[in-house]
Image 1 (spheres, rainbow, N blue to C red):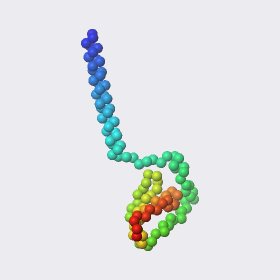
Image 2 (image 1 turned 180 degrees about the vertical axis):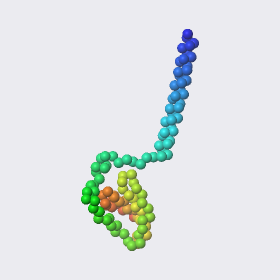
Image 3 (image 1 turned 90 degrees about the vertical axis):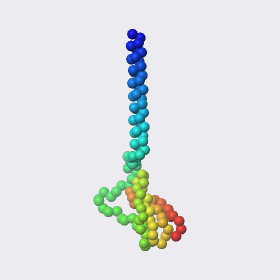
Image 4 (image 1 turned 60 degrees about the vertical axis):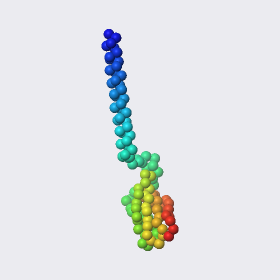
Length: 117
C-alpha cells in the first residue's frame, strides 16, 4: 500500500513540475512578444474630456499659419503618444528646426532650432 501512495505522490510532483515549466515558457513567450510588438497608448476618458470642443456646426476652423521663411519644407512628421505632432522643417533662410503642434488645440506648443543658420 505504501508503495502505491509513493508512486502517486511522485507522479503528482512530476506532473506539477512539468506544468510549472510549461507555464514559465508561456510567460516568457508572452513577455518577449509584447516587448517586440508594443501597442500604442490608448487615450483615457480623462484625456479625451480635456480636449477642447470642436465646432458643432461643421464649420471649418481657421487655418494654422506657420511664420516660416519662403523655401521652407516639411522634412518629417512624427505622431507622439500624447497626441502632439513633431514636425521637422528644413530649408528657407534659417537652420533646421522642429515644431511641436497640438492639432486638437490648433496651436504651436514649442519650437526647437537645430544648429545655427
